[in-house]
Image (cartoon, rainbow, N blue to C red; front, side):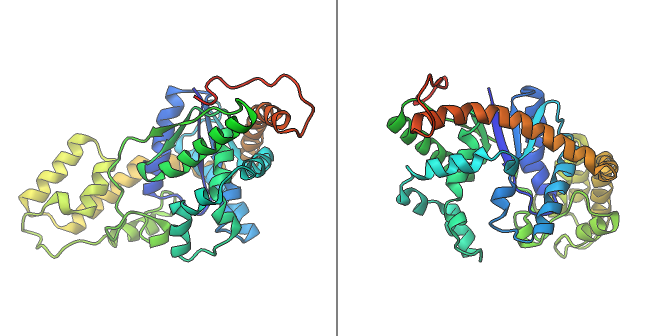
Amino acid sequence: MRVLTGIQPSGSLHLGNYFGAIRPLLELQERAPGDVFLMIADLHALTSVQEPDLLRRYTLELAVDLLACGIDPGRVVLFRQSHVPAHTELAWILSCVTPMGLLERAHAYKDKVARGLPASHALFAYPVLQAADILLYDTDLVPVGKDQKQHLEIARDLATKMNEVYGPLFKLPEPLIRDEVAVVPGIDGQKMSKSYGNTIELFADEAAVRRAIGRIVTDSTPLEAPKDPDRSIVYALYRLLAAPDEAAAMATDFRRGGVGYAEFKRRLFEKFLEVFGPMRARRAELLRRPDTVREVLCHGAARARAVADEVMNRVRAAVGLTEAGTIPAPVNAGG
């Protein structure tokens, strides 16, 4: 059962990234070793990162961060999207059967333009490249949040259309809906996001982490008064990091009163260092060995290309770009 997912190299990882994307990947690599393809989506990142040196740095740092967090390249195929040229080739072939109306209905394009990104062709055609990413590996499952299902539905629509026009070519991937983790709040109470500038970065230096935690918005309840943990950003973040008994103890202190928000923030900072300290140490070591990280990505790309080439041989023959021959169909094409 093959799983594919991708992460854009667009800056430093934060707590929201960890709980929303990385921790589920760590669980997946234990359940399906060797069948998880994790793509660093550097081609997609070009829609928003157009400084070459910055993109190179973000890409390498994301690989470092993923490895530091525990992604095991022996269990996960970790690779750069741009190192598998078939992604763009398949995107063009898919674009030849993509109705304009399908793309015009994509809400992600409208959302990104509303946030100020230029209305480029790449941004408009983003779902086609994303469909190519998915279909290129005979993917069975794609981890998605409920708000991301539309792009997977577009991939299924394009796979179905190709299967109707050219015969059984593609599997129809299914969503692997992530267990709903409570939305990770940012320090201002909105969803944690780089675009809101309200993050707590996983690998910032200790002083920066302490400052970010110190800026978490709290109310004006006096130190001695009881406080409601369920309305506290500090408690919401602590509960994500702590064991259930530790979270329960903090909730009790909230309700009892006599403890101020400064103390709760101190406990959150210490818990953050306890949880992410080993990862931060691994990251520092990996940054001293960037060639080792590049070797991991090259090995991952070779493994990804081997799978992608099989699919593209099938596609090229079906659409007439190579001589006709025996075209092995995927197991569930069209069904």
